[in-house]
Length: 468
Image (cartoon, rainbow, N blue to C red):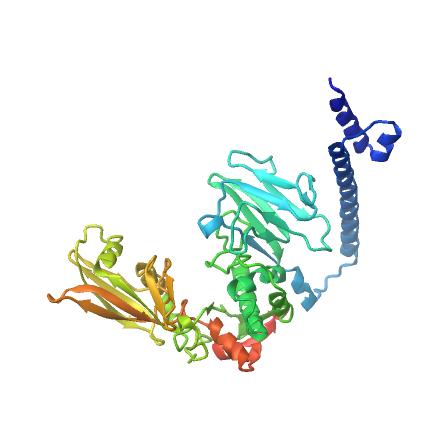
């Protein structure tokens, strides 16, 4: 047995018995720097474990006293209690393709403890979970901050976002299903909004626009929390971090966005005493729409189509993109695989704000009928096509057409057959609720966030969550 091995064993024994480096040096045992570091970290963990245990005992004692003092009378919820509301967010993989990760790599930016085992992870430590690894009988890792009085973060190195490798406050819950690892971030609602607002609206927008965004985001999140429909199917998540709900921690947090959240703390939009679904989108085409674009049997009373010329100078206000007949035929084959000729494409119905609600595509073997805003935008995916915006700037198209507000201009050959279609469109997004660029321009013109919200949503009130 070599001397270094014996020293390390002795170090660990002494450290576990509360003895430190100075005690070892008194015994005239010389230590390598890495051995000193090992002992320091073991002692730090022991102190933290002792403090954590004391805090847990204090909390338990405090709860017992509270139970004794509790009366049958219900205490009214105060606005301060809002900060205790927590939301659980499923963290998707890079590119938002799945809820299940093949590999998880974490870096702790402060001290955390795993609640089931009591194991400590100190700042700068890493935790790696490979696909083939299994968890203990507890089934989940619940990683919570040791000291909740300060800011705590865990960086997920195995996920890439717009800001780089994102970090998350609150608690991380990690578990494993047959498809891989899942990660859920549980944190206070207001802190969640710190990561939503700058990911949904640029942080350099006007403060009053950011405040309007914060109220919309809080209202939308609150509605999803009440539904409690787990998108992952594991029983603990309420939303995910993608555009399917609200984008979270794609852009880094910013002071201006935090201020907008703090200055509207606990405020949501209600109508007739109930929270509304506060839809919002990027840019209008001159007016907003109602939820008829999603085949609603009757538009929500607070979602009226209103004129919106405020974002008329934004590049996405008007745009155009060209689809060849060959390109359209390839997309038609996703629904009619044996089609060989695109004969015609036409708009059959538009809505109150000119959204295309029905699109018909005729082929040599049959007809495709599309009757939903999302389906239409997906069928007309301009992936890798050049979109020309109103300022003559060009961008590559993505998976969805920028909006469903468009007209068709057929390019006909000498035989009367369509060679392709120029789509003349306007706006970016679904067009329902608040235009974010419109809100920013309204703020520049001197409107406050209450005025902005009351313009885009009809006959609503701004009220505290505690009163709903």
